[in-house]
Length: 156
View (cartoon, rainbow, N blue to C red):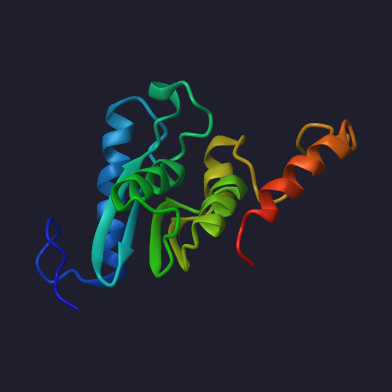
């Protein structure tokens, strides 16, 4: 594989793409954001890079990986990111893992683990999340009716 534009000579593959994610993380840190960056690649070509923007966007879901998926979908005018590899400077949280799954991303390569981040900050979420209490079944029939109508119009 050839060197990736914008990286050091001789740096290829995973390291080159992770360096692009690290550059995005540095930009995030300079902007006062958590220093997390991401890079999305298909067939050796960079599709997009992004950084955390939770503070600037006042959006708790504006993690680097989610921002990356949004940008890649807009650029490609698609919801299907199959065949891509996501590089993230920190292991994606459960929300970002789910978003990656729904986007069809085939592989995630990360640098630091969530455990690493939690050891430094004491507050980052691991894979097991004790979230809000949940209650189901409120107006279930009406919701199922909408879902049936929507699913009925889709090809199997």
